Length: 545
Image (cartoon, rainbow, N blue to C red):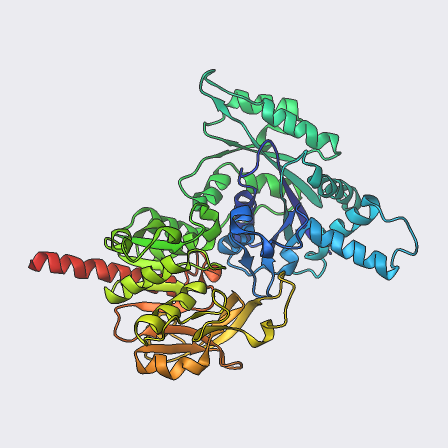
């Protein structure tokens, strides 16, 4: 481990306070000072990973290069730091218990009674310090999911307590994120929720070093002093975290509050040089001062929970900023789209993205949406299932292959233009068995997608069981849907596009998973650019009229 420092971020009072954003923002500030930083998330649920969870349960499942299905917070970590995460960056209670029980079955514990303490907590501790063992990082930040006081979080808090004792002074630090609500009726900020939360954490044997207090109102000095006094922390270690217009403002807000300086002082790390956030500030400048505006429809089946499409939302923010364009998203529930009402949903849009998903529900609406944008020459972008249903729509309405379908929806279809991958046919366990992680793709020169990447060989992340059926490739290409990207080893079709359309591109992979603040994804940037051009073309038509 060497001199690796370990920071633990816990939360209290309520969920969704923003532990992931605070962790990512602190990591960004430390990285901007020249430190090598990584972040990991420990989730208290018993699922091995979020791969089998309904998006309504847990939001988006974020996939890493090495094929791990992880918590959506890892997306924030990558977008802020611009460095990839891995299987080691997300650990669940299920993964911990699965490992311990497997070891027990092997006889690894030599007949001992296997208990939460020490066996479960020892495995948690092993995972917590794993990323710091090879010397690749100066600082490892660990976000503990859930709230202090939850039964399922207790083993993680106990592991943190033990690690602080194991590693010694100045090697670890605990940041506790809590809520200071404003009661309008009383006209006051209330500190009791924070006091009780810290009390619960302290009763578990962990005294926080720094408090980050979420609030809608500025915390005056007397409130900070009260919190410091009753929670037993230094006054300058009470950090306010006000609601921000954008999550990308938070690193600058935390810098203003000197969170990074407090962390460095407590960990005995050098406080110079000052953070170099020039590129970050330039991004924020473009984000907040757009010169153009487009409205893009996102057609999906989970639109009621925006976190189900978190990486897509952020990729549009990155691409919008790069194009100095404000991207407005119109959320369209595919269940409600029909051939009769599709025009009312899509006619005023500057582009349409058909989102990923699984299962039969909402497929018909996605197909009707794709037909409308194809026939009306509106910029279109399909991702994963979005590509698959674009292929189905083209097969039915251009190739006239009656009832053409994906076998995911109709296993007995006569024209399986989307078929299950050969290696998937005998799989019965659903967790972690899809085609996952980063795979190579070779692009065809002279295509729209090549003009976005400006290179022939790319690597993108996947999460799917079904693929384009190459038996139909010649028919598709003869009628204008060209295969523009293939896997060089398996010949799997990765991307398709329409030659005669202004911008109709679909990809089997998930480009949104690799978009970051510093490196917006080229496909999203190209799509936004196409939407901007479409707006100009409509304006020109109106002027001539």
